[in-house]
Picture 1 (cartoon, chains in turn purple, cyan):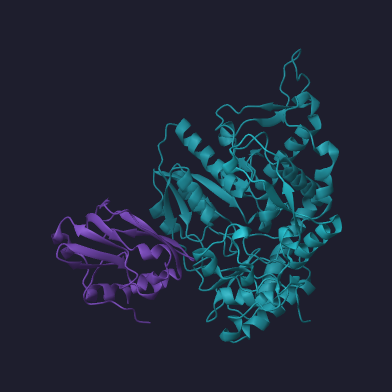
Picture 2 (tube, helix red, strand yellow):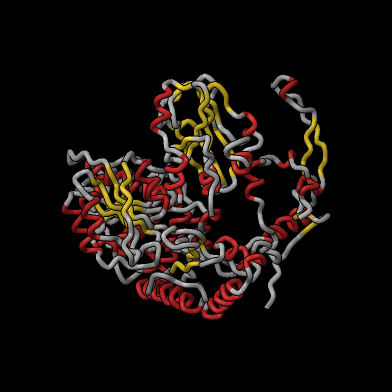
Length: 127
Length: 485
């Protein structure tokens, strides 16, 4: 089975993706992660304004199989969370890189992006 | 024989709730609360006694229990609970108030003392507390006792080692007690890898938690070497009594080198299990750990001549010297303990030996009969088969249509699509053949058919995703037109 690994994202080993533009980044979990979890039934996210440090668990994704922490790929301040996930957690399964995004971060240090995995490196990890 | 479970429906839905059958508005008198917090009337169920009796009978008919058929749930030991133990527990003399002075409830204390002794003898332990109210509570008590023992000896140990095939409660117990968990990989035979154990154990190891036979139904043959590795590092050996049914009257954890153990009386000694609880999880320890047991504990009277208790003919409560304190109100879940006592006393030594022999024979017979691959073995009281290309959950749902309860599924994870079966000694050969036939029928089904199963049981496949995404926690919030199932 092959999973979607978009070229315009960077990745953390723990299966989060980051799409950075002009000092801010959108964060979600990967296609591989949503497939492993199965049907997502609940997503717990931080509040706008929260400061997240790299590697912190910032929320929880709950499926009928498992409850998993989600980790901050890059440090920064939360500027938006995906409110739609409150009522439609299935978006994480249906469109993990699009409508199923989790939150947006104003990056504390853009240089941190260089520590993330490239699409090719992440693809190697999951295949 | 084709199976159809009793299924009571009304207007195409399950047996309605009492309040849906008939209600009557009842006026509520004025109370001290503000008007905006109170109602003027309440709608209460309005039914005659026979209507009420029929409602509960219908629900009972749609239920499935070990009195309906076999429940081969691996690791659960769902044996039949003989009904005479209920009579004994319901006897008025078994119901004494726990606040009564010890002198006036000597029979109760004697029963506690004898049950402590029975369990100690069965497990090869020196002292047993009856207080923990369930298996997981027993684990927690046992690990707290081990921790208190290390603390008392001035030892600061931070980790507990647990095999990857262990019950999830072991990991939770260690974490709740404040320990770091070191997970131990199984070897190719599904047993503890002694080399890996040596690498994992050090002077930070407080205990190794082990089930023997393990979750795959395999006896840990190297148990003496395992005990030496742990003891040489100054750690303790904890025995999870989940699988004690396999050993009754034949081998004792204490003789294998275990220092602490819990007994699942709801598994091994036929007291109510799960929703039929409450349970009880007595904990046994060696002499060195006895001073740390919960208080109070029951012993024979120790009074010197001229004092109360002189003559040592009666029984008394006492607080062990370095007790970890209480782990439950009073003395534990008393009626459950009375049932366990009655079960052990009725079977005796010979009966307990028969129990383990029959349980092991039944598991091996069933393992031979079923068409699924069983990667490990020979086994003790249970075995783990693999559903192979089938989804283990679909296999389970399919078995429901044959009038049997399915095995435990998808666990332990070291076997793909695990089907973990433990028929217990309760099942006859005829019953085991019926179980095997259910496995055979489902193994022959194409995947697509199983996705629709069950179709002959009272409840059909549950919408787990819908229930989790959109939980309806109050019946008044239900849209009853959804119940067209």
